Structures are given as structure tokens and as C-alpha cells.
Image 1 (cartoon, one colour):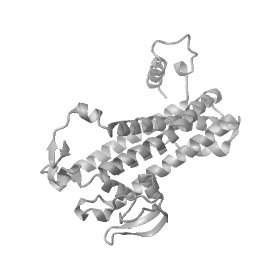
Image 2 (cartoon, one colour):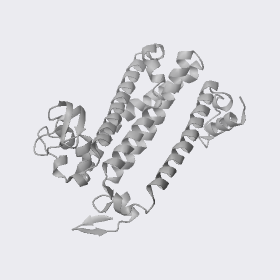
Image 3 (cartoon, rainbow, N blue to C red):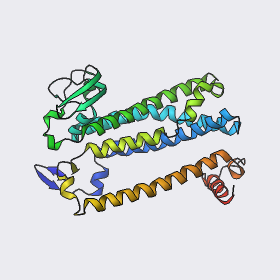
Length: 308
């Protein structure tokens, strides 16, 4: 639904897709998926190269992974800025929580670290850069945007989870930009494959994209509380009449099942990485295939069928 003149009107799927905010959300997640995958490819390539295994394949993986990260990580910063401006327009309280910005009557500082004190409506142990949050959110160093005090306490999201999750997401994003640009520079200078000081941390960086995506979803879903449909329907009013015990039992069961599934998945993928590329995955291609992913499918079937 969309609120116009205090009335909630139903919105069609076409209106959602052609809504000005949809391209930001879609491109943000689309780029994040490619960026996460590229970092995994680069990390595996770095792991092989450091171990002296599958040297030619690892160099190809590094070129592909770092090339994508060097392009997509700065692009994600631009898309994220556009998405942030859109969020500031439509969900200003979420942006206030992301920045732990309490007083909207003055320009906002960029809070690098703090412990948001919701009871006192202030930040404890704050380390900040004056006026930079205003520059980011409004593109004006003296610009103003709403603070948390501009909203009733019952209309604010939990500040600490949103504030810290946003910093995790942005911090990892900055590291990705640095990794991509440094890697591209080393590649350009012909030093990439011998720079062990760079390859070692890169080989451990494969989970970074997944963590950033989860942190971003935490910001998105926690930041719009207490609303299920922003400004229309509160989460508490849409909750099913299910007992807390039943919800807790279901949650625990989901955590256990998914912990087992993901642990097995990570173990299996690690086994595939240890085994390395074989068979169809390293077979030279003949001509241009009509189905570009056919070789990958054949290699995947080989890896699954073979034991050990």
C-alpha cells in the first residue's frame, strides 16, 4: 500500500517495479551478489597461489576476481549513496538510527564509534567527524536532516543494532574498495602474483561479502521497525496469535537445522576447493559454446559424482 493524503491505496506489482526507489534496491543487491562472488573467486585463487597449486588457474581466478572487485566495489559506493538518499526521503527515522543522530536542529557529525544511549537520547564514548554525516546525507556540509528526537520513542527502531550493523556493512565495503584498487594497482605493475603480503589476507577474505549482506539486511529490516508496512501497519498489530514458547521452539529448530546445513555446505565446498580444478573445469574449450555455462555444469557433476 501507499499512503496519499492519509489514505492507504493498494499498489500493483508494476507500480512497485517502476517506483523510483526500486532501481536502487535492486541494483544494490544485484551488485552485492556479484561483488560477494568475485571476492570468493579471488580468495580461492590467492589460496591456491600461496600454496603453489594450480598456478595458472589461480592467476586466472585472481585476475577475474580482482578485476570485478575493483570495478564493483566503488560502483556499490555510488549506488549505496543513491539508496541512502532515497531512504532519507522515505524512511528518515531509519537514517537517523543508522547515524545515531539525535538532534535534527543542527548539522550531523559522522559518528565513527559510539555507544548509543537510548534512555538519555545521546551517544556515549563518541568519536566523530563534524558535519560529515550532513554532507553524506544531504550533500551539504551544513545540511539538516531529522534526528531521532524528532520521532516519538515508540516510533523509533532499536538504535544499537541498526547503528553497529551499518558500520559493519560500510566498514567491509571500504575494505573491499581498498582490496580491489590495491589489487588492480599490483596487477598493473606486474607485482600481484608475488605480493604475499596482499595475497594472504585476500585468501581469508571470502566471508566478507556474506557478512556485509547480512549486516545490510539487518539494517534494512531492523531499521524499519516498529513498522511492518512503513507508516501504515505496525509489526505488533500484524503478529500472529502464537505463543512465545511456540515461536522460541520454532526459532531454535531453525537455528539448529540451518547450522547443520550450512556447516555441511561449507565443509563440502572446502573439500572441493582442496581437491582443486580437474576434468571438465580445466579442459580447453573448442570454439565458442552455445551454452557458456555448460562447462561449469559438467565440472559440477564430475565433482559431485567422484568420491573422496
